[in-house]
Length: 155
Image (tube, rainbow, N blue to C red; front, side, top):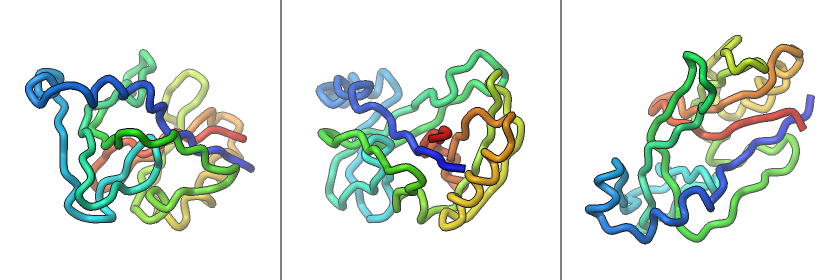
């Protein structure tokens, strides 16, 4: 089963970079200077930010469905980066190098299964998940921090 990993659209975050620290704080956001690589994965570029780079730490609603699974969590976003468009069946390094929680959702946005997998095995886990016709899409999360990594759909 082929799949496609989807990064977040940079347009959703563009205006936040012009805000002052005070304005960001009012919206529960903040600027962070990256201290180590890897360690700060951007959800737009699907790559780790560089040491010394300033990124935004934002609470992002990644599951917008009106179900008990509606959810948000902190994510990092880099300024001025293009939206990643991984090839079919490609797993970007910032995803494949981490321990992941894989959450499977049906067409009614209800979770039908979940697992924890090493990033190097996530492509196989995604393929197996999509063998089940009830699985409409998948959310990947960084298992240790719990933050949303990316959405996966059938290609």
